[in-house]
Image (cartoon, rainbow, N blue to C red):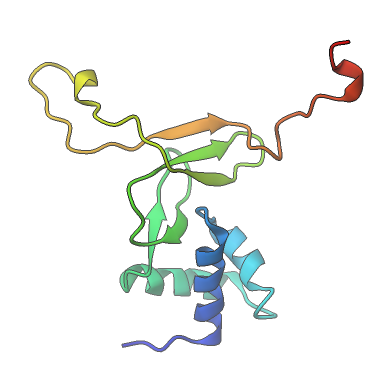
Length: 132
């Protein structure tokens, strides 16, 4: 059993407090608030250890490097902002997708990723452009 170091504790806390999947760079930036001088190699080493002990899980989006979130969450999907590339949890599901499968096929699971702009990246309507 490996002990939780100050670095590992900060990395785990960064992921747990984010409430969304984080990239390794986001983990580094967040965890550095607790541990000055934290480096990317330490982040990767600890992400690997946290994956192995089941504390976190990888979120793999098509064409992207993995992001990380706490393990044991209920079934959910993800939204990726096309502008800032941050990923957010979506706690809704379209449900049974068996009707989309070809005849004779059985759906055993699914992943759904929505793409668009997050609230921070969505253009705000200015007072000048508002209808009068």
